[in-house]
Image (cartoon, rainbow, N blue to C red; front, top):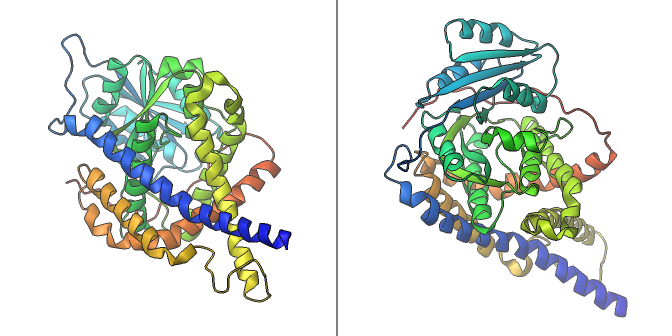
Length: 429
């Protein structure tokens, strides 16, 4: 009898955690994001470029673009980078052992563009070492790093550099990626995801303390800070998460700048999306294992919240799977500590609450990023599919990531050409 009471209580604790944890985090993100907007975004709403103080001036910037098999995207990406509106900049394209015509395209572009430098790595070394190679030849202290398929906004650099010249403790400023391919269901859902999840979480994390990660597709760095922590780690699957933690553990500040826009391509097939999200999840697990000891270091208290959130998110994923499996088994055999017909996902039939919270979160995010990305409202309807499609995807990638990281051999993280969906011409405004 005692064991049955214990199992019954444990079952309800697990159900409560599965239900209330995402509800609590959603509420936290909404409050933090709204606070961030009124403190950091609204005061600059009327400016195209940020104003400078009397004793400030715009320093030189090096735009780094690591490329691997980017023959299809190189011309467009480089052209956007060369056309940014900024007084003093150079563009450095790093060909990381591409097997297509990327190098030839980059060399031809450099012949007619004195601002463009090309660095060629004969063999594929991975994004981390490609970025390091570019930073070593950069002539400026401030680096803006974008991916080889990204289209940088013409005023992006101004908004990033503002943080560096005004705050000497800032080591990195992550930008605001926006989805270009919006024709398929997966593309439409990801438009909302990057606002309601990615953008909102970054705003909230900055309001409450530190960022879990910069966006690898668009981030500005202070070169001295990156050099201090040993540059990007070549053995990490997600070098962007790793460099964020390395900088913050060394006492540097990392910020989010929503006006630093870049337009990106995302996977539009299930297999491509699975590979991408599994890599992200495995990178998060690698960083968790690498930095777990911060919980025992009094000087690293500023990172405790991030680590606890990361651990709870992993625990939630495994709890969700366990609860679902137990409930599924109860359909075929009697399990006495379960209530008949009791859903493992929504205790007490509270689906209305979760759906309502999702819609509120999506609505707030549309309002926030709608200042920079026109037409977000068109994708609001498609976000009703997010909990069904992406929660399940992220759930199973999270559960798969931990054993894969624990069982895999540590080595160099090299490029894999991703699925980038349907290539579309960017329409501004």
